[in-house]
Amino acid sequence: MGARKKIHDGIGGLTRGLHRIYKPVIAAVNGWSLAGGFEMALACDIRIASENAKFGSFEIRRGFHHSDGGIVRLVNICGVGFALEMLLTAEPIDAAGARAAGLVSKVVPQSELMAAAEETAAQILRWDQTALESAKETILDVIGRPLDDQLAIEAVYGYALYGNPEISGRLGRFYDKTDVGRVGTHAQAPAST
Image (tube, rainbow, N blue to C red; front, side, top):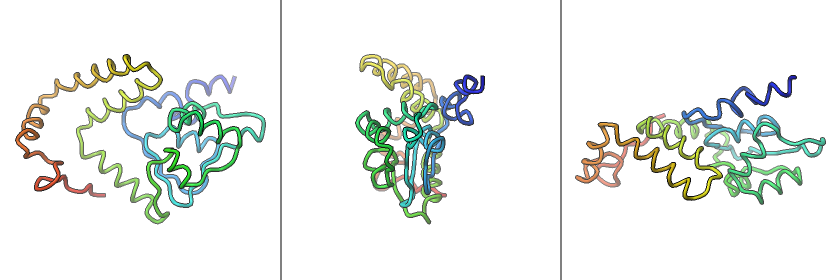
């Protein structure tokens, strides 16, 4: 009964159930990321690693494999070839290898890890949250679908945002070249942490 109960919520709800929340989730990985910790990191939207981070999937060594989204997410994030090599050899991947495979978006010194994660969060918080949530929902919904379906989903979700009355003013400032975020005299201020 216990295993069947896990199918619905996974590890703490993040690997299943809560995986569809549209608020961005950032992982700051320092040291080893193994087993359930690896699956939780994969369930995050953005992964930032310290230089001493290592990732491993050693379950094969013990006669089983991931069951809370580790395989599915590793394939979606890094591709079939990388997932097969990592899972079937059961060998660890260092931070540089994780970056090269797209498993993490950046690698920073250990002393800068939390600041890098907080800076990323601050960068995200600068923008319209409805648009961010819609972008995340679109990304999650297009995974694994044929191109025509992906394009239709993107259009439906994207055009639905035009009901926001603030968009016409933002577009007007863009066309007038007075909008915040433009390179040059109207550059976006750095995110504060």
